[in-house]
Image (tube, rainbow, N blue to C red):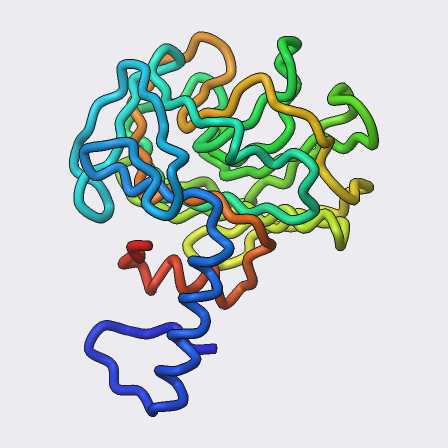
Length: 240
């Protein structure tokens, strides 16, 4: 596969490979939120519903902005991981102020007891993470998380991607197109039940901090390393 660079020159075969990779990614995308002044899903019709979020300058165009736990974007159940064996989350984030608790770019909550089914985000120590609840039935099993070893910097855009490949029993966490951690899990598929809620922007506890998110995607497959690199696009990002 090939990751195109702006201004680069490629053979005909390389351009065909890029086109096939892009088409396959788009076809496997459940929802994609550009967040360019609206909350529309650009690939299907699974639009988000905002709660007090605003728009500011983003990685590409505009981005969504939150000041804490009371400002979020609700997503419809159609983007749920329920019953799936492979799911990927991706998105750009920009931490403006100190986090007092974990920040989730996307999180799916299983039930009113606040059991997290799938998530990815950044910890209070500014370490990126991805996590999944490992259960065969129900949604109250143990929560397993893979965390990056190097903290990200505030006031800098980072591309994060969490790949939940439950058919092969693993989670892979990427930062800026590079795998930074993986975890073996004893889960073959997500529980096949509707979630309690799904959100872009969620905080553990009543946290207040300033965070931006941009180009947020939900995928019905385990993205390959080449596909993650394609989305990162040498730090430039990519519209879908």
